[in-house]
Length: 350
Length: 108
Image (cartoon, rainbow over all chains, first blue to last red; front, side):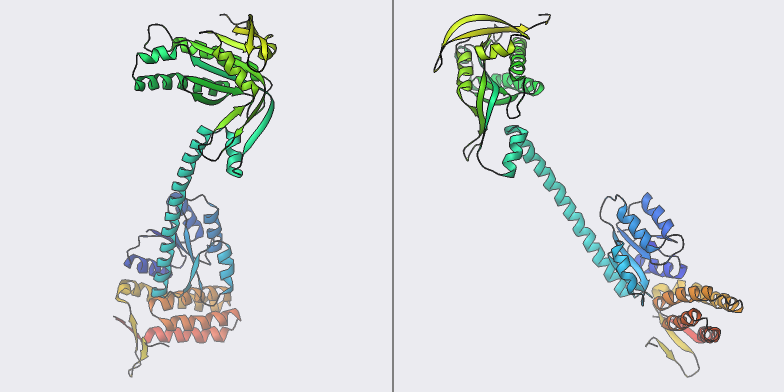
């Protein structure tokens, strides 16, 4: 390990250099604190031995400068002081010195202190390597957590792992599935089918991310996404309308290896939902409530290639989007409701 | 002062020094003679601060090279200079000069 020494007396400097070099330590010597500081800034040193009183810059100031510097690793500083000047030591330690030796040098003592310093440098080195590994691991689990939960939900789960069930008065839910999925599946191996779903859902995930809406889950060939949770937003219905239109465009561009492009059925409903994380194993962020089941029925009884929305979603979209009445439709638990087909955004060239 | 400096019947003082330092010793002793010269001149001008500083530095170096007496004598000079005690400084310089004349360095 290279040692930087700062010592203005030539005889003491030569002696220090000789003692260290005989022990196999390469030495760089500076004639005062300022010269040492300049050398320190140019080259990397982990061990510095500095005299207390020097012209230009003393040992205490050198200590302070090194401690304030942004160094690659921990720098161990041994301060050299006159044998009777014990009161200087407090000041030296406060300035950031780790240890001291007294002059005249006692070779054995000096080398023992250098060895103990090197031990500390090596321990510190190991510690910072471990810390680096640890934060890399933390980052990995953080990424994993964020791939499962929305960020605000992940933060809350980290703070206090208990049931999360939040009521939202206003949110929208979208379900989509692939028309005639069973028919397509019949002509392919299960692996091919999974690969196709992976391709389709990855695209949707990317779109959801771009639109700032919350992908909730997939069930078989069905894809569920929500807006207005976990962070409320006024334009939740508009956000899912844009999401749905983009999904329909994307699916037409996707080469599924079929004669005809895949066709999606999409359904949207808007209203109150409960969102949260329940249970103790295989945790997932999920949504509950009538809005969820209505959205699913909008999808299930929709048309291939179309986006069917409920009356409550229609009310929120009519100003900005193009919708046509589909007719009355019987919804479980609600009775007859009017449904609409969303075909585009007003003012869009298409 | 310690076992490595023993007066011998002929007035010589044998100083045992680490062979690792052999090549440094002539220069080290030469610097002490310059110190004595410089401090004598400073004394003529009652420049006690220069004497104190020089003595302080010698004090720090002497023992490390194996010359414990230089450290001891220098401490006396430093103290005398601090008190602006000219005769104390002169006495210390004479002791140092006499010591340097009598030493014989053995590397072992």
